[in-house]
Length: 80
Image 1 (cartoon, rainbow, N blue to C red):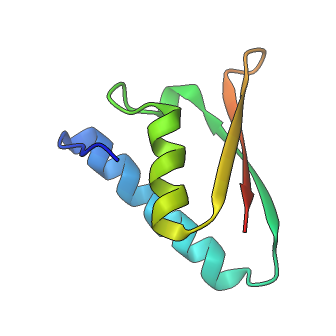
Image 2: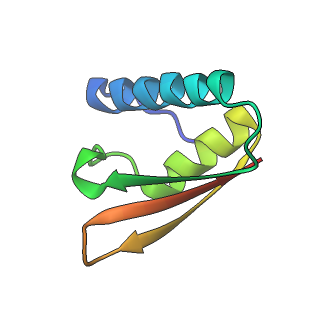
C-alpha cells in the first residue's frame, strides 16, 4: 500500500477507518455489506483501487467495487 501524506487523503482514510470499525463493532453477524460512495468524496490523490486494497489488508475482509456511471458512485461490496 502506498503511503499518503496529504491532509485531505489522511483525513478521508481516518474517517473510513473509524466508520469500518464502528460497523464491525455494532454489526457482528454480517457476511456481506453493501455501501455506496460518491466519486466526489474521494481525494484526487487516492484511487478506489488503493482504498479497497488498504482496507482489505488492514481489516482483513474483501472489498470489491463497481463504478456506477449513471449516479457517479462507487458501489462497494464488503465480504468477511
